[in-house]
Each structure stands twice: as C-alpha cells, then as structure tokens.
Image (tube, rainbow, N blue to C red):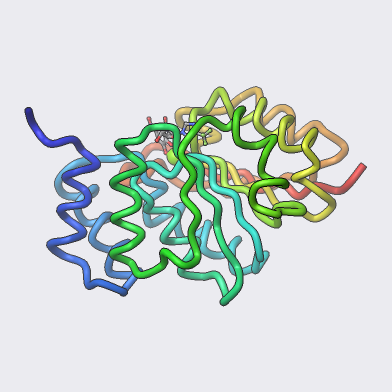
Length: 215
Ligand SMILES: O=C(NC/C=C/[C@H]1O[C@@H](n2cnc(C(F)(F)F)c2)[C@H](O)[C@@H]1O)c1cc([N+](=O)[O-])cc(O)c1O
Ligand SMILES: [Mg+2]
C-alpha cells in the first residue's frame, strides 16, 4: 500500500535536512508541507510564536500533548538549555515511530522523552514515573475535545502550579470552544490570544497562552 503522510514527511527530512541540525529539520518539514502536502504541524508562523513563548518561559520541564511527527517537539527541544526536557505524549504508535526518527535526525533525543499512550492513562502517573513536580510549560496540540478534560486532569494531579504556562494550538481552527471559555473565564488563569494563521494557509487560527495564577 501507499506510504503514509508521516512516512512521506520523514522521507523529506532524510532527503533535505542535515543530521544534528534541528533548524534544517524544521525547514524541510515546512517546505514539504507548504509545497507538496499539507500536514497538521504547528508550522512556521505559529511556530515562531511558540518559539517566543518557550524562550520567555525558559522551562525546565515541558509537557507536549500530541507529538504527531515531532515537528513542534523539535521546535521546543532546540530552545531548551542543558538539563531541561520535553515529555511528549503520542497515542498513535505509527506516528510515534516516525516522530522518534525525526527527533533523532535533529540530534535532540537527549532532551526529549516520547511516551506512547493516552493522556488519561499517563497524566496521573507523571509525578511518580518521571519525577516531575509540576510542568513549567504545557503545549496542547492533540485532539481538540481533549484540551479541557486534560487541563482539568493536570490541575487535579497537581501538575499545573502557580506560574505554569499553557499554550494551546488551534483555538480558532479547528477550534476548542469549551477550553477557550474555561481559561478565559476562570479567575485562576491569565489568558492571551496570539492571532495567526492555520499552518501553511491563509485561514485564521491562533495560540492561546494561559498562565496559572494559583489557587
Ligand atoms: O486535529 C488536529 N490535531 C489533532 C492531533 C492529534 C494528534 O495527537 C495525538 N494524541 C492524541 N492523544 C494524545 C495524548 F497526548 F493525549 F496522549 C496524543 C494523536 O494521535 C495525533 O497524533 C489538528 C487539525 C488541524 N486542521 O486544520 O484540521 C490543524 C491542527 O494544527 C491540528 O492540530
Ligand atoms: Mg495543531
């Protein structure tokens, strides 16, 4: 049968990017997805906003929900200082296998912990299994109807504490209305919308940054 889209994205990385050079991996994926085949990476425009938030927060521990091919994992990991790491959760084993190779090609495997499974199964074990006290930054880019329940689960598990920054992709397109309503109306979050465009298109989309203020 035909290759999958993630397999074609990995091929583009292996053809065009330099091993150990994260920026070339990012550039190769963006070029492929803009000129050959669209894919649901956060992309270069929203990716620059992600970069600025990562740099501003300078997190020690990051949680990413939704690895897909590892594009945003590489964007985040390349900005982390030694000793910092991103734990990225991926439900689909085929996507996880591709992402591992993309992350390895970028040379950032020491800063990334890719975990396969469902958020509901893994989030309650994060503290015990990874020795995480609380996350400094959470990047939400998985199934849109899971943003709100998983945020509430992270709160309940004590993984979101005063100062934790949530950054959510696709709050306009495809949209995460219940999540947006929650973080914008909750007295415990300070939210800001970064207006942008859906990756590789002219459609509106944006990132919502929400800082937890504590209880
Ligand atoms: O549907 C979109 N994204 C869904 C993304 C889903 C990805 O998150 C993984 N996941 C599921 N649960 C977990 C966890 F972590 F819970 F275990 C991880 C899924 O296997 C998939 O790889 C999307 C769609 C569009 N679009 O334009 O249609 C644009 C975008 O930027 C998008 O992100
Ligand atoms: Mg997205």
